[in-house]
Image (cartoon, rainbow, N blue to C red; front, top):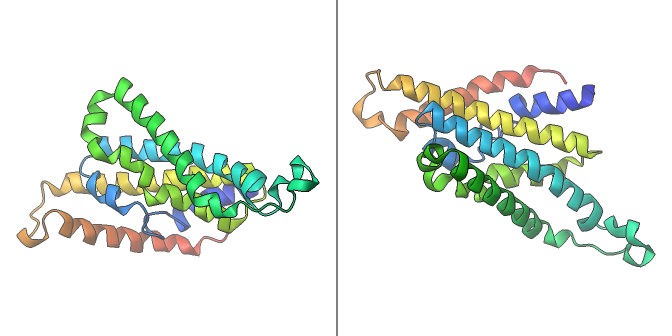
Length: 205
């Protein structure tokens, strides 16, 4: 249990998808204008990560890795389908994103309209694919660890976009110099938030 908590905390604060790896920046910058839309997209990204990463973990460990098919018999023990991992991961992600898009459109049309093109673009959000690829690299021992990492990564991305959205809403009442209005000041704030998150590197897990 302690190991799962360590993985969760580390993925939220230390290995944050936005501030440590700069993944998912396009939608992070574009949809962070209001807290409402940022919350909607953040929850959608967290849900997609939470569903796709464990599925991809199972596919990786029981079908794709060299020798993963040993459970099917000795004749399959030498098979290696790891070259298909990118395609399989993207197919799983695209399927889940399509499901999320249909649910949001049905139950929250206003949020669907405000997110616009960025909701289907979750399918190509590099934070989502990055989570599955980091899962490969980290060699988690079981699906529990992979799920903990997925949840932490999603919540880390959610906290990042919510924090930026809250600041950008307050900036509407601030006297921002003309040349820095819009993305200019947003980049500066993102950099400062990244520096702030670096303070979590001191956490010993």
